[in-house]
Image 1 (cartoon, helix red, strand yellow):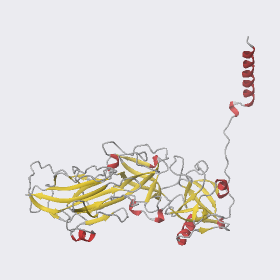
Image 2 (cartoon, one colour; image 1 turned 60 degrees about the horizontal axis):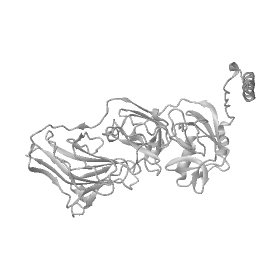
Image 3 (cartoon, rainbow, N blue to C red; image 1 turned 45 degrees about the vertical axis):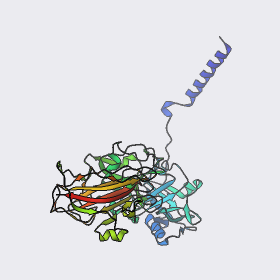
Image 4 (tube, rainbow, N blue to C red; image 1 turned 180 degrees about the vertical axis):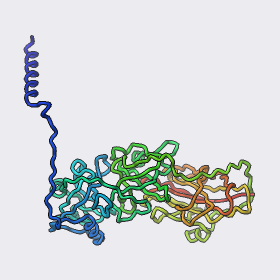
Length: 469
Protein backbone atom coordinates (compact mmCIF):
# COMPACT_ATOMS: atom_id res chain seq x y z
CA UNK A 1 0.00 0.00 0.00
CA UNK A 2 1.25 3.48 -0.78
CA UNK A 3 3.04 5.03 2.21
CA UNK A 4 1.18 8.35 1.89
CA UNK A 5 -2.20 6.57 2.04
CA UNK A 6 -1.12 4.69 5.19
CA UNK A 7 -0.11 7.99 6.86
CA UNK A 8 -3.49 9.55 6.06
CA UNK A 9 -5.39 6.59 7.51
CA UNK A 10 -3.34 6.69 10.73
CA UNK A 11 -3.90 10.48 11.07
CA UNK A 12 -7.66 10.09 10.72
CA UNK A 13 -7.75 7.29 13.33
CA UNK A 14 -5.78 9.40 15.79
CA UNK A 15 -8.15 12.33 15.40
CA UNK A 16 -11.20 10.11 15.91
CA UNK A 17 -9.76 8.65 19.12
CA UNK A 18 -8.88 12.11 20.46
CA UNK A 19 -12.33 13.54 19.69
CA UNK A 20 -14.10 10.57 21.28
CA UNK A 21 -11.98 10.82 24.42
CA UNK A 22 -12.49 14.56 24.87
CA UNK A 23 -16.17 14.99 24.06
CA UNK A 24 -18.99 12.78 25.36
CA UNK A 25 -22.43 13.49 23.90
CA UNK A 26 -24.21 13.07 27.21
CA UNK A 27 -21.95 15.63 28.92
CA UNK A 28 -22.04 18.39 26.26
CA UNK A 29 -24.07 21.40 27.43
CA UNK A 30 -24.45 25.02 26.42
CA UNK A 31 -23.06 27.19 29.21
CA UNK A 32 -25.72 29.14 31.13
CA UNK A 33 -25.02 32.85 31.62
CA UNK A 34 -26.08 33.86 35.11
CA UNK A 35 -27.04 37.48 35.63
CA UNK A 36 -26.88 38.68 39.20
CA UNK A 37 -28.98 41.57 40.40
CA UNK A 38 -26.71 44.62 40.87
CA UNK A 39 -26.38 45.83 44.45
CA UNK A 40 -27.39 49.50 44.12
CA UNK A 41 -28.91 51.39 47.03
CA UNK A 42 -32.45 52.58 46.24
CA UNK A 43 -31.63 56.19 47.11
CA UNK A 44 -29.10 56.22 44.26
CA UNK A 45 -31.66 55.18 41.62
CA UNK A 46 -33.49 57.77 39.52
CA UNK A 47 -36.52 57.06 37.37
CA UNK A 48 -36.50 57.73 33.65
CA UNK A 49 -39.14 60.39 34.25
CA UNK A 50 -36.80 62.40 36.49
CA UNK A 51 -34.06 62.47 33.84
CA UNK A 52 -36.46 63.29 31.00
CA UNK A 53 -37.98 66.12 33.04
CA UNK A 54 -34.51 67.55 33.75
CA UNK A 55 -33.70 67.47 30.03
CA UNK A 56 -36.97 69.22 29.20
CA UNK A 57 -36.37 71.94 31.76
CA UNK A 58 -32.86 72.57 30.42
CA UNK A 59 -34.26 73.47 26.99
CA UNK A 60 -31.52 73.77 24.36
CA UNK A 61 -28.71 73.28 26.88
CA UNK A 62 -27.55 69.71 27.65
CA UNK A 63 -27.51 68.52 31.25
CA UNK A 64 -24.36 66.92 32.69
CA UNK A 65 -23.85 64.20 35.29
CA UNK A 66 -20.09 64.64 35.65
CA UNK A 67 -19.79 63.85 39.38
CA UNK A 68 -23.05 62.02 39.94
CA UNK A 69 -23.32 58.80 41.94
CA UNK A 70 -26.81 58.15 40.59
CA UNK A 71 -28.16 55.42 38.34
CA UNK A 72 -31.21 55.57 36.09
CA UNK A 73 -33.41 52.50 35.90
CA UNK A 74 -35.82 51.49 33.13
CA UNK A 75 -37.01 48.74 30.79
CA UNK A 76 -35.71 48.12 27.26
CA UNK A 77 -38.49 48.49 24.66
CA UNK A 78 -36.43 48.64 21.46
CA UNK A 79 -34.73 45.80 19.62
CA UNK A 80 -32.15 45.94 16.85
CA UNK A 81 -32.54 42.25 16.04
CA UNK A 82 -34.36 43.04 12.79
CA UNK A 83 -32.04 45.94 11.92
CA UNK A 84 -34.66 48.65 12.35
CA UNK A 85 -32.76 50.28 15.23
CA UNK A 86 -29.02 50.95 15.13
CA UNK A 87 -26.64 51.71 17.98
CA UNK A 88 -29.35 52.92 20.33
CA UNK A 89 -31.48 51.58 23.16
CA UNK A 90 -34.91 52.95 23.99
CA UNK A 91 -35.95 52.45 27.59
CA UNK A 92 -39.09 53.50 29.47
CA UNK A 93 -39.75 53.92 33.19
CA UNK A 94 -42.30 51.13 33.72
CA UNK A 95 -43.28 47.86 32.09
CA UNK A 96 -46.95 48.86 32.24
CA UNK A 97 -48.56 52.31 32.01
CA UNK A 98 -45.24 54.08 31.31
CA UNK A 99 -44.98 57.84 31.65
CA UNK A 100 -41.50 58.60 30.29
CA UNK A 101 -39.00 57.16 27.83
CA UNK A 102 -35.46 57.99 26.77
CA UNK A 103 -32.96 56.98 24.09
CA UNK A 104 -29.46 55.73 25.00
CA UNK A 105 -26.87 56.39 22.28
CA UNK A 106 -24.04 53.82 22.26
CA UNK A 107 -21.46 52.72 19.70
CA UNK A 108 -22.39 49.02 19.86
CA UNK A 109 -24.16 46.78 17.35
CA UNK A 110 -25.99 44.52 17.95
CA UNK A 111 -27.48 45.31 21.35
CA UNK A 112 -30.36 42.81 21.57
CA UNK A 113 -27.96 40.00 22.54
CA UNK A 114 -27.24 41.77 25.83
CA UNK A 115 -30.30 43.95 26.35
CA UNK A 116 -33.34 42.11 25.08
CA UNK A 117 -36.88 43.44 24.95
CA UNK A 118 -38.25 43.81 28.49
CA UNK A 119 -34.86 43.63 30.23
CA UNK A 120 -34.55 46.02 33.14
CA UNK A 121 -31.29 47.97 33.04
CA UNK A 122 -29.44 50.44 35.24
CA UNK A 123 -27.65 53.32 33.54
CA UNK A 124 -24.64 54.72 35.43
CA UNK A 125 -25.08 58.46 34.99
CA UNK A 126 -21.58 59.57 36.00
CA UNK A 127 -19.92 61.19 33.01
CA UNK A 128 -23.06 61.14 30.85
CA UNK A 129 -25.02 64.04 29.39
CA UNK A 130 -28.63 64.38 28.33
CA UNK A 131 -30.34 66.56 25.76
CA UNK A 132 -32.82 66.72 22.91
CA UNK A 133 -31.35 65.18 19.75
CA UNK A 134 -33.53 64.93 16.63
CA UNK A 135 -36.47 65.98 18.76
CA UNK A 136 -35.97 63.07 21.18
CA UNK A 137 -34.71 62.99 24.80
CA UNK A 138 -31.33 61.23 24.64
CA UNK A 139 -28.46 60.18 26.90
CA UNK A 140 -24.85 59.79 25.84
CA UNK A 141 -21.43 61.46 25.91
CA UNK A 142 -21.22 65.20 25.32
CA UNK A 143 -19.53 66.12 22.04
CA UNK A 144 -19.34 69.87 21.70
CA UNK A 145 -22.88 71.00 22.45
CA UNK A 146 -24.48 67.77 21.25
CA UNK A 147 -25.11 64.42 22.89
CA UNK A 148 -23.08 61.72 21.15
CA UNK A 149 -22.57 57.99 21.50
CA UNK A 150 -21.21 56.20 24.54
CA UNK A 151 -18.00 54.42 23.39
CA UNK A 152 -18.21 50.65 23.06
CA UNK A 153 -15.53 49.98 25.69
CA UNK A 154 -17.75 51.60 28.34
CA UNK A 155 -20.79 49.46 27.57
CA UNK A 156 -20.72 47.03 30.50
CA UNK A 157 -19.65 49.69 32.99
CA UNK A 158 -22.44 52.12 32.06
CA UNK A 159 -25.36 49.87 31.03
CA UNK A 160 -25.83 47.27 33.75
CA UNK A 161 -28.32 44.45 33.36
CA UNK A 162 -30.83 43.51 35.99
CA UNK A 163 -31.92 39.89 36.36
CA UNK A 164 -35.49 41.03 35.69
CA UNK A 165 -37.04 40.57 32.25
CA UNK A 166 -40.55 42.01 32.40
CA UNK A 167 -43.55 41.55 30.15
CA UNK A 168 -44.04 44.89 28.42
CA UNK A 169 -47.67 45.97 28.11
CA UNK A 170 -48.01 48.51 25.27
CA UNK A 171 -49.61 51.82 26.14
CA UNK A 172 -52.81 52.12 24.11
CA UNK A 173 -53.10 55.51 22.41
CA UNK A 174 -54.64 57.05 19.30
CA UNK A 175 -52.82 58.93 16.55
CA UNK A 176 -54.62 62.08 17.69
CA UNK A 177 -52.96 61.66 21.12
CA UNK A 178 -49.41 62.11 19.81
CA UNK A 179 -47.41 64.52 21.98
CA UNK A 180 -43.85 64.96 23.19
CA UNK A 181 -44.65 63.33 26.55
CA UNK A 182 -45.29 60.03 24.71
CA UNK A 183 -41.97 60.03 22.86
CA UNK A 184 -39.84 56.88 23.39
CA UNK A 185 -42.75 54.84 24.75
CA UNK A 186 -43.85 51.43 23.52
CA UNK A 187 -47.38 52.02 22.26
CA UNK A 188 -50.29 50.24 20.63
CA UNK A 189 -52.61 51.92 18.12
CA UNK A 190 -55.74 50.06 17.09
CA UNK A 191 -57.89 50.27 13.95
CA UNK A 192 -55.31 51.57 11.50
CA UNK A 193 -54.54 50.78 7.87
CA UNK A 194 -52.12 51.92 5.20
CA UNK A 195 -53.38 54.56 2.82
CA UNK A 196 -55.13 53.01 -0.17
CA UNK A 197 -52.71 54.70 -2.60
CA UNK A 198 -49.86 52.68 -1.07
CA UNK A 199 -51.44 49.23 -1.00
CA UNK A 200 -54.24 49.09 -3.59
CA UNK A 201 -52.41 50.40 -6.66
CA UNK A 202 -52.19 48.58 -9.98
CA UNK A 203 -48.69 47.33 -9.11
CA UNK A 204 -49.78 46.00 -5.73
CA UNK A 205 -48.71 47.11 -2.24
CA UNK A 206 -45.53 49.07 -1.68
CA UNK A 207 -42.80 47.49 0.42
CA UNK A 208 -41.85 48.74 3.87
CA UNK A 209 -38.66 50.40 2.63
CA UNK A 210 -37.62 48.74 -0.62
CA UNK A 211 -38.83 51.26 -3.20
CA UNK A 212 -36.51 53.14 -5.55
CA UNK A 213 -37.11 56.45 -3.80
CA UNK A 214 -36.41 55.13 -0.29
CA UNK A 215 -33.17 56.55 1.06
CA UNK A 216 -32.15 55.55 4.62
CA UNK A 217 -35.82 55.16 5.59
CA UNK A 218 -39.07 54.24 3.92
CA UNK A 219 -41.98 56.36 5.12
CA UNK A 220 -45.50 55.00 4.72
CA UNK A 221 -48.83 56.58 5.66
CA UNK A 222 -50.89 54.91 8.38
CA UNK A 223 -54.41 56.23 8.82
CA UNK A 224 -56.89 55.79 11.63
CA UNK A 225 -60.19 54.13 10.82
CA UNK A 226 -61.68 55.87 13.87
CA UNK A 227 -61.11 59.52 12.99
CA UNK A 228 -59.05 59.66 9.78
CA UNK A 229 -55.93 60.94 11.57
CA UNK A 230 -52.68 59.98 9.86
CA UNK A 231 -49.18 59.01 11.01
CA UNK A 232 -45.92 57.99 9.36
CA UNK A 233 -44.46 54.51 9.78
CA UNK A 234 -40.71 54.83 9.29
CA UNK A 235 -38.66 51.75 8.40
CA UNK A 236 -34.90 51.59 7.93
CA UNK A 237 -33.62 50.50 4.53
CA UNK A 238 -31.19 48.31 6.52
CA UNK A 239 -34.00 46.37 8.23
CA UNK A 240 -34.38 42.71 7.31
CA UNK A 241 -38.07 43.22 6.46
CA UNK A 242 -37.64 46.23 4.19
CA UNK A 243 -38.64 44.25 1.07
CA UNK A 244 -41.82 42.77 2.53
CA UNK A 245 -45.07 44.11 1.11
CA UNK A 246 -47.28 46.27 3.28
CA UNK A 247 -50.42 44.49 4.51
CA UNK A 248 -53.60 45.59 2.77
CA UNK A 249 -55.91 44.82 5.71
CA UNK A 250 -56.47 46.93 8.81
CA UNK A 251 -55.43 46.13 12.36
CA UNK A 252 -53.08 47.31 15.10
CA UNK A 253 -49.57 48.71 15.44
CA UNK A 254 -47.17 47.97 18.29
CA UNK A 255 -43.87 49.80 18.42
CA UNK A 256 -42.19 53.00 19.50
CA UNK A 257 -43.33 56.58 19.01
CA UNK A 258 -40.40 58.78 18.05
CA UNK A 259 -39.60 61.62 15.62
CA UNK A 260 -38.00 61.86 12.22
CA UNK A 261 -34.37 62.85 11.54
CA UNK A 262 -35.25 66.54 11.60
CA UNK A 263 -37.15 66.21 14.87
CA UNK A 264 -40.19 67.98 13.48
CA UNK A 265 -42.62 65.13 12.72
CA UNK A 266 -43.82 62.20 14.80
CA UNK A 267 -42.82 58.78 13.47
CA UNK A 268 -43.78 55.24 14.40
CA UNK A 269 -41.06 52.58 14.36
CA UNK A 270 -41.42 48.80 14.56
CA UNK A 271 -39.03 46.46 16.33
CA UNK A 272 -39.93 43.91 13.66
CA UNK A 273 -42.74 43.30 11.18
CA UNK A 274 -44.73 41.24 13.69
CA UNK A 275 -45.58 44.52 15.43
CA UNK A 276 -48.26 44.93 12.76
CA UNK A 277 -51.25 42.67 13.36
CA UNK A 278 -53.47 43.48 10.39
CA UNK A 279 -56.09 40.76 10.62
CA UNK A 280 -59.27 42.65 9.72
CA UNK A 281 -60.09 42.10 6.05
CA UNK A 282 -62.58 45.00 5.99
CA UNK A 283 -60.85 48.28 5.17
CA UNK A 284 -62.24 51.69 6.04
CA UNK A 285 -61.68 53.38 2.70
CA UNK A 286 -63.99 56.24 1.68
CA UNK A 287 -67.28 55.49 -0.02
CA UNK A 288 -67.06 55.88 -3.78
CA UNK A 289 -69.73 58.10 -5.36
CA UNK A 290 -71.63 56.22 -8.06
CA UNK A 291 -74.56 58.16 -9.51
CA UNK A 292 -74.98 56.01 -12.66
CA UNK A 293 -76.61 58.74 -14.74
CA UNK A 294 -75.88 57.84 -18.36
CA UNK A 295 -77.68 60.72 -20.08
CA UNK A 296 -75.99 63.81 -18.69
CA UNK A 297 -75.80 66.79 -21.02
CA UNK A 298 -76.12 69.80 -18.72
CA UNK A 299 -74.97 73.12 -20.18
CA UNK A 300 -76.03 75.63 -17.50
CA UNK A 301 -73.19 76.85 -15.26
CA UNK A 302 -74.12 76.08 -11.65
CA UNK A 303 -70.70 77.08 -10.24
CA UNK A 304 -67.45 78.29 -11.77
CA UNK A 305 -64.06 79.46 -10.50
CA UNK A 306 -61.08 80.24 -12.75
CA UNK A 307 -58.97 81.87 -9.98
CA UNK A 308 -57.99 84.77 -12.25
CA UNK A 309 -58.86 87.31 -9.53
CA UNK A 310 -57.27 85.30 -6.71
CA UNK A 311 -53.64 86.16 -6.02
CA UNK A 312 -53.11 85.14 -2.38
CA UNK A 313 -54.50 83.09 0.50
CA UNK A 314 -56.73 85.94 1.70
CA UNK A 315 -58.36 86.08 -1.73
CA UNK A 316 -58.98 82.33 -1.57
CA UNK A 317 -60.63 82.65 1.83
CA UNK A 318 -62.77 85.58 0.68
CA UNK A 319 -63.93 83.43 -2.22
CA UNK A 320 -65.13 80.84 0.31
CA UNK A 321 -62.27 78.36 -0.06
CA UNK A 322 -60.78 76.49 2.90
CA UNK A 323 -57.12 75.46 2.93
CA UNK A 324 -55.95 73.31 5.81
CA UNK A 325 -52.91 71.18 6.67
CA UNK A 326 -54.05 68.31 8.91
CA UNK A 327 -50.59 66.81 9.48
CA UNK A 328 -49.34 69.64 11.68
CA UNK A 329 -47.21 71.57 9.18
CA UNK A 330 -47.62 74.95 7.51
CA UNK A 331 -47.79 74.07 3.82
CA UNK A 332 -51.22 74.33 2.18
CA UNK A 333 -52.69 74.88 -1.27
CA UNK A 334 -51.84 78.39 -2.43
CA UNK A 335 -52.47 80.76 -5.29
CA UNK A 336 -50.11 80.49 -8.25
CA UNK A 337 -49.68 81.90 -11.76
CA UNK A 338 -48.81 80.06 -14.97
CA UNK A 339 -46.98 80.96 -18.14
CA UNK A 340 -50.10 82.04 -20.01
CA UNK A 341 -50.90 84.64 -17.31
CA UNK A 342 -53.75 82.54 -15.93
CA UNK A 343 -53.99 81.73 -12.24
CA UNK A 344 -54.91 78.68 -10.15
CA UNK A 345 -53.98 76.92 -6.94
CA UNK A 346 -50.98 74.68 -6.42
CA UNK A 347 -49.19 72.52 -3.88
CA UNK A 348 -46.00 70.46 -3.55
CA UNK A 349 -44.18 68.77 -0.68
CA UNK A 350 -40.78 69.43 -2.27
CA UNK A 351 -38.32 71.00 0.20
CA UNK A 352 -41.04 71.56 2.77
CA UNK A 353 -39.37 69.23 5.31
CA UNK A 354 -42.90 68.07 6.15
CA UNK A 355 -43.37 64.33 6.56
CA UNK A 356 -46.15 63.68 5.97
CA UNK A 357 -47.81 66.60 4.26
CA UNK A 358 -51.57 66.04 4.24
CA UNK A 359 -53.45 69.10 3.02
CA UNK A 360 -56.95 69.89 1.80
CA UNK A 361 -58.39 72.49 -0.57
CA UNK A 362 -62.16 72.72 -0.06
CA UNK A 363 -64.51 74.73 -2.24
CA UNK A 364 -67.27 77.00 -0.95
CA UNK A 365 -70.81 75.62 -0.85
CA UNK A 366 -72.25 74.79 -4.27
CA UNK A 367 -76.05 74.82 -4.38
CA UNK A 368 -77.59 71.97 -6.40
CA UNK A 369 -81.21 72.66 -5.38
CA UNK A 370 -82.11 74.50 -8.57
CA UNK A 371 -80.55 72.15 -11.12
CA UNK A 372 -80.47 68.56 -12.31
CA UNK A 373 -78.01 66.26 -14.13
CA UNK A 374 -75.03 67.98 -12.56
CA UNK A 375 -71.45 67.21 -13.53
CA UNK A 376 -68.16 68.43 -12.10
CA UNK A 377 -65.09 69.20 -14.13
CA UNK A 378 -61.74 70.87 -13.47
CA UNK A 379 -58.26 70.98 -14.95
CA UNK A 380 -55.02 69.71 -13.43
CA UNK A 381 -51.37 69.96 -14.41
CA UNK A 382 -48.91 67.60 -12.68
CA UNK A 383 -45.19 68.19 -12.51
CA UNK A 384 -41.96 66.72 -11.13
CA UNK A 385 -43.96 63.55 -10.67
CA UNK A 386 -43.14 61.38 -7.67
CA UNK A 387 -46.31 59.34 -7.44
CA UNK A 388 -50.06 59.85 -7.62
CA UNK A 389 -50.86 61.63 -4.35
CA UNK A 390 -53.95 63.73 -5.10
CA UNK A 391 -57.54 62.58 -4.54
CA UNK A 392 -60.86 64.35 -5.10
CA UNK A 393 -63.87 64.06 -2.79
CA UNK A 394 -67.36 65.54 -2.45
CA UNK A 395 -69.64 65.91 0.56
CA UNK A 396 -73.16 67.08 1.35
CA UNK A 397 -72.40 67.59 5.06
CA UNK A 398 -69.18 69.51 5.66
CA UNK A 399 -68.43 69.75 9.41
CA UNK A 400 -65.80 72.52 9.19
CA UNK A 401 -63.21 69.76 9.73
CA UNK A 402 -62.10 67.53 6.82
CA UNK A 403 -61.18 64.72 9.24
CA UNK A 404 -64.67 64.38 10.71
CA UNK A 405 -66.53 65.02 7.45
CA UNK A 406 -68.12 62.09 5.61
CA UNK A 407 -66.73 62.26 2.09
CA UNK A 408 -67.53 60.48 -1.18
CA UNK A 409 -64.49 59.66 -3.29
CA UNK A 410 -64.69 60.70 -6.95
CA UNK A 411 -62.74 57.67 -8.11
CA UNK A 412 -63.09 58.37 -11.83
CA UNK A 413 -61.40 61.77 -11.68
CA UNK A 414 -58.53 61.88 -14.14
CA UNK A 415 -55.44 62.89 -12.13
CA UNK A 416 -52.67 63.11 -14.73
CA UNK A 417 -49.19 61.68 -14.41
CA UNK A 418 -46.71 64.47 -15.07
CA UNK A 419 -43.08 64.49 -16.23
CA UNK A 420 -40.37 63.89 -13.63
CA UNK A 421 -38.38 67.01 -14.56
CA UNK A 422 -40.93 69.69 -15.34
CA UNK A 423 -44.64 70.41 -15.59
CA UNK A 424 -47.07 68.75 -17.93
CA UNK A 425 -49.94 70.45 -19.68
CA UNK A 426 -53.31 71.05 -18.06
CA UNK A 427 -55.67 68.12 -18.56
CA UNK A 428 -59.37 67.81 -17.90
CA UNK A 429 -60.37 65.66 -14.95
CA UNK A 430 -63.28 64.46 -17.07
CA UNK A 431 -67.00 64.97 -16.66
CA UNK A 432 -67.74 63.60 -13.19
CA UNK A 433 -71.35 62.67 -12.49
CA UNK A 434 -72.57 64.19 -9.20
CA UNK A 435 -76.26 64.26 -10.13
CA UNK A 436 -77.38 61.93 -7.34
CA UNK A 437 -76.47 64.56 -4.72
CA UNK A 438 -78.72 67.41 -3.66
CA UNK A 439 -78.85 70.52 -1.51
CA UNK A 440 -75.39 72.08 -1.08
CA UNK A 441 -72.10 70.28 -1.67
CA UNK A 442 -68.41 71.00 -1.30
CA UNK A 443 -65.55 69.59 -3.35
CA UNK A 444 -62.39 68.56 -1.47
CA UNK A 445 -58.95 68.09 -3.03
CA UNK A 446 -56.72 66.00 -0.72
CA UNK A 447 -52.92 65.99 -1.11
CA UNK A 448 -51.07 63.14 0.67
CA UNK A 449 -47.35 63.72 0.24
CA UNK A 450 -44.11 64.00 2.18
CA UNK A 451 -40.70 65.55 1.57
CA UNK A 452 -38.09 63.00 2.70
CA UNK A 453 -40.32 60.11 1.56
CA UNK A 454 -40.03 61.43 -2.01
CA UNK A 455 -43.81 61.86 -2.38
CA UNK A 456 -43.46 65.41 -3.69
CA UNK A 457 -45.46 65.61 -6.94
CA UNK A 458 -46.52 69.18 -7.73
CA UNK A 459 -50.11 69.92 -8.79
CA UNK A 460 -51.77 72.97 -10.29
CA UNK A 461 -55.58 73.11 -10.24
CA UNK A 462 -57.69 75.47 -12.35
CA UNK A 463 -61.14 76.06 -13.88
CA UNK A 464 -63.39 74.27 -11.41
CA UNK A 465 -66.88 74.12 -12.89
CA UNK A 466 -70.23 72.48 -12.15
CA UNK A 467 -72.71 72.20 -15.02
CA UNK A 468 -76.38 71.16 -14.89
CA UNK A 469 -79.83 71.61 -16.40
